[in-house]
Image (cartoon, rainbow, N blue to C red; front, side):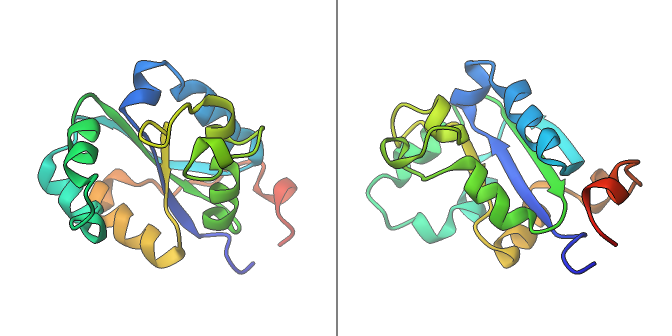
Length: 154
């Protein structure tokens, strides 16, 4: 089945960790039928963030973004499944919580665009790049999920 092995990076940002939302966010992805293949809690370095957010370096908010993202731990996850990148973006919701629909992570939990709880890769190419930044190959597991035949037609 095309796209079953697609992977994406989802990261619970410091405000989401501080507000103890990690479990609820994981639950949403599990209930959707995606498979967790990587998970870790990290204190993110400015070096990693400068690579991750490289396209934003010239933006006026970049220094405050770095300060925010280094202010506490981040829970980084890699999820796998059919169309996981696009579906995850829909599940997470608009970057600005004021424009995020109810039922999305940001629509339900975020208050301000500067504290929007979670990051989700924006494309398959972006996901591959971000996963390589955040995880070493040995940190990602390939395993068979018993419900795969139930959740996807093969």
